[in-house]
Length: 285
Ligand SMILES: C[S@@+](CC[C@H](N)C(=O)[O-])C[C@H]1O[C@@H](n2cnc3c(N)ncnc32)[C@H](O)[C@@H]1O
Picture 1: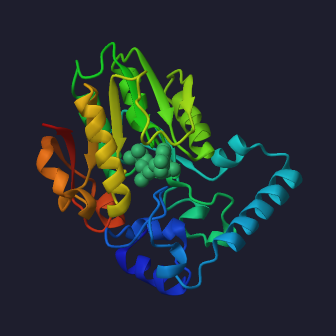
Picture 2: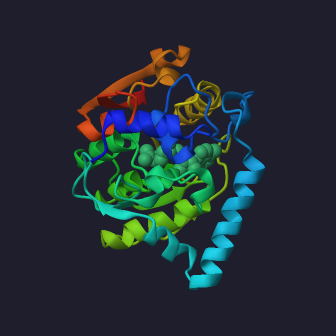
């Protein structure tokens, strides 16, 4: 069983603070490495970290692994995840990296994936997905973009709730594979993907933009807020799921947001996410 004290042991054991472990400590004061233009680098807050070496090792691992076993990337994602309904939308079955998985405690060198954010179901995404599933008319006949979709739960919920179309967007191509796996697991056809960075684009093909847990880096939040506000002013409906992270709670633009829903998170999610016990859905007022 994964315990809080266990997490501290792991933390001490891993001076380079594995990203897989780091996600459990997502601290709103830590700069994150989302695509940001952030002035902080991972090396700054983690002196042992060398992205180049890590990526090299990951690629080596992947090549060796797939060459020896003939596994595809999809096989590998399947192999490194387990099916889980242990979240606040249990009607969705998701393949996730959980405490039962090898990668939960892996060091970066042991991981074939540089940043498997798609392997976790983030508290902001959970609230947003719960909200979509509980709101019968929210996305009906709408063209939906799941921006930074990760495991794809929010977009899958939009499909269940009869959106006209759902485009799953994530700059990590492995996320696209994870979304396909999760779509199949729930008998949901997933056919629209976008792996480019859409920040700043007009999103002319979409009516609704879903933003699940994308605001845990304050500088990234700045550019995101500006873009989302512009989209809102152009008539797009924006729904943001967030557990009350620093980037949203203290952002000047948060006064322009209206809270639509609040959910209690499961205890395990709370422990993994810096004690955030609730998660919220916001929209522009
Ligand atoms: C914290 S995870 C949230 C995933 C999912 N929305 C959820 O709530 O479970 C952030 C995701 O955003 C993706 N991401 C980061 N920057 C991005 C960008 N500029 N455009 C699209 N996706 C991005 C990451 O690859 C990651 O999958």
